[in-house]
Length: 281
Ligand code: BEZ
Ligand code: FE
Image 1 (cartoon, protein in one colour):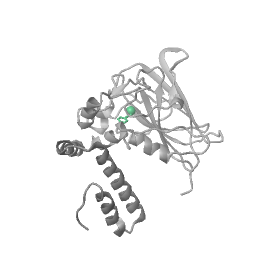
Image 2 (image 1 turned 180 degrees about the vertical axis):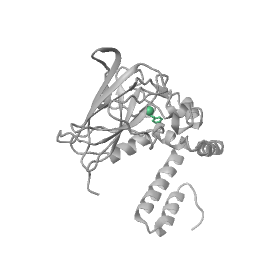
Image 3 (image 1 turned 120 degrees about the vertical axis):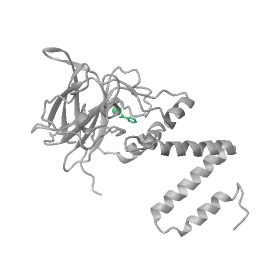
Image 4 (image 1 turned 60 degrees about the horizontal axis):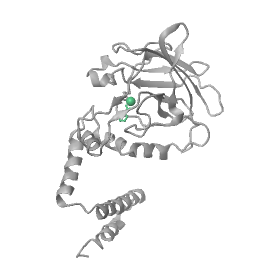
């Protein structure tokens, strides 16, 4: 077949995919072609605009390194990461709501005893974090792995301030005790802009958007027999709760800071997590 034009080229590309024997690959390729062609038909880009789009994607790729993933930032800021998260966490019954992992998770954070202070280098208002991990029936989950990480009081993560692993700070792993409880000390995190010195930052500017995330503490919770969940607890009252640049805020994840008895300077963050039962695959 020849003589392709705007009326027949979409179908011609779809027909060419008939040779694809992997059903999932074919379905994905077909949807990609249909939606991409529909996008181009709707936008009717000039050739200069199309070249600009390709330059944007090229810059996005070139910005990526071992410590910077600009494509994930693009997915986050276009709401695609939260859409993928929602599709993959349709838990039936009680379970803590999930949200994006973000680029600052470090797999090899140190495991520390319950009650440890996980902020060594960073300075800031003291914080005590306390919580429980339960199953959907309300029973405590003992020995659950609680991984946590957060920004400092100026909105920077340890990995943004330094390079070495030795400097890992405000992140740790703890395990729940026999009552499903955990607690640790740290500092109160601040709201922060996502890395915005690259193409995604330029995109946000062009779209008239700010780059901020409301203050939060990240959690990744896992235990044998349960689905792992990745979530945050957001600090109530933050000015960016309704305009999080990555669309990650859910009401059920917002918590007001309290105070610690006999420690007037220490803020208290309490959250009770529910792990969903493992889904048969
Ligand atoms: C974060 O919360 O660490 C984060 C999430 C998405 C993009 C940038 C940062
Ligand atoms: Fe974060």
